[in-house]
Structure formats: C-alpha cells, structure tokens
Image 1 (cartoon, rainbow, N blue to C red):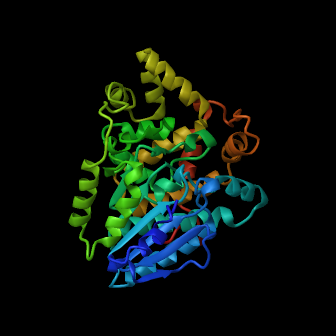
Image 2: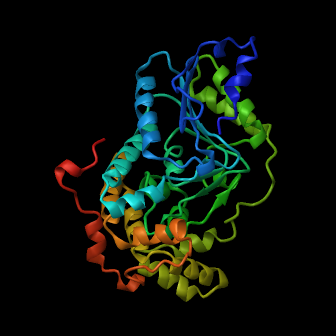
Image 3: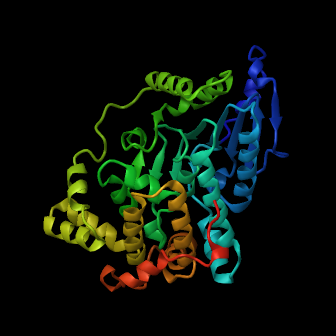
Length: 380
C-alpha cells in the first residue's frame, strides 16, 4: 500500500524536501520498503496479496532501521503505511507460526520476541510516529500502529483483535491499550473480537484522527513536506485534513449498547461476566453468549486475566507478560486447532480442549503467566 507516492512526488520539482531521498530497499518487490525522504522515514508494508501480514523477515528489516533513524539527529518523523487497496496490516503471519509450532521450529520464539521488541520501540521511539491505517488493521497491524502518537483511520479501516477465535490472546501490547479504552470497551473487544470500522475507530479512542481514503496520498505528501515538525504541528495538520474530510454523521456503532457493555462486562472474573449476560437475558446478551461460546475457553480466561493485570502495568511490563503467555500458547492445543480451523482447513469448526469455560482450571491459567527461565525471558 505504498500508493506509488514517491514516483509522483519526484515529478514535482517545486518541493525541495523530496529531492533528498534514499531508498533503503533494493527492490520494489520487497515485503517491506524503507525510504528516507528528506528528514522523514517512510515504512511501507508491501505484501498486498497477504493483506500485508507481518512476518519475521519484515520485522527484522523494520526494527533496525527504526533504531538507525531514531539515532539520526536529522530525522524528524516516521510514517508507516501499507500497499494495496484492502489492508494496512491484517495481522501476523499466524499460519506460518502454527506450522512451525508443530515442527519445533524456533520461529515460535523468535517471531514473538522480535515482534514485541518492535512494538515496544514504536511506543517509545523519540520521533513522531504516524500510522496511516487505511484498511484492515488487526493483530500485528494494531501492534505496528496503536502505540505510536498518531493513528489515522479512513472509512476503509477495519479494526479488530480476533485472537480468541483462533485459540490465542490479544497480544502486541493489547494488555496495555485495551484496558485503557473507556469503560469496559477494551475487554468487550478483546473477548468477542468485535470489529470497528471507519470513524468508529476514532470514536472508540483507538485512532487519533480520520481522513477520507482518497486524501491519504495528499496527507502523506503534506506530512513529508513539513520542514521540522513538532507533535503539535503534526496534530494541527492531521486535524486540518480531518476537517476537510467527509465524515458520515452517525452515532458510534456501540452507542446504544455501551451501557450494557460497561455493566455486564464488569466483574472480577470471566465467570461473573457470563453470569451477568445470562441473568440479563436480553437479545443482545444472548448474542454475546453465543459469540463467546465459539471462542477458545482457555483464550477467554487468559484474556480476561491479562487485561486485569495490564490495567496497572507499563507497556514494557505488558509485553514481557505477553511473551510468557505466547510461549505457553505455542505448547497448547487450542492455538494450533484454531489456526487449523480458520486458516488451514477452513472448516470453522474448532474442537477446543477444554471445551467449556467451566472446565478450564484456574491453576492452569496462572501457569500461562509464570516467569520463564531467565534466558528465555523477553529483553526490552
């Protein structure tokens, strides 16, 4: 989703900021394209046929380049985007990870370690970081965007953390940003995998700004053209573009259910949430119970506990916790079964073990959060 911006820019000789360009990539077919345009770094995820799903080679190119740009005193901004019409980044390459799990490949350790290190860098980098989340933004794509200062959504944006449906958990810092959304919205999104689209991603507090997708190219040009942008100046520019965009005037998609979400998803355990929904007995509550019944019971209980702990943790602490959880899931039945049912056999009929929330032992859940051997812990 590079939008071929550089080619068009170079044809406009009145814009001196674009005349100093260094293409770090060696080929336009690279899975990630890294460019230095003047004093801006531009990252383009370039796997459109795979919806720009993030894999380990991409991580290994982005992370060191971000470190180089951060150490360069001339650099003033990072912009990240995707190529193609459909996705910013639809997630991590989960299918490859699941297959590696079965074969004992070290990818199961390396991918999550290096992905979370990249997530931490995007949340702590000492440069303005602007993610243009035009299209599907899920899982790993959320991790590449949500921790930075600016996330620009469009009417094409589709946000979700659907991990409980594949026997996993909302990682990439989900335990940090989800509990910090208003009320119980983050827990609701995490447990059910509910999808937010368009301007609702801003209303939920996940994106910071909105522009129409047909303005994304011009917005990127405006960002790159800024001489020495501050956080405040970037915000003003994004707000200006937002004001010039056509935003459909409609209520937040969850406006009429937020009260129930905040009430029924309140409690000190997943069991209480399920009891609340059962007692409420409204059609909406019944629908939520049906949705939860399709998810991995282990994933649901881990996710609930993860977000409870994450409320009071730093991003660094959350990512370290999530790495421990990820390694336990790599040894668990449900992760492979979920990926098999959704991405490999595509029968959408996972057989979870245990099969119900009631059967999931709390001691087993606690074990997912236990400290790893010292040499296996995530270093940040």
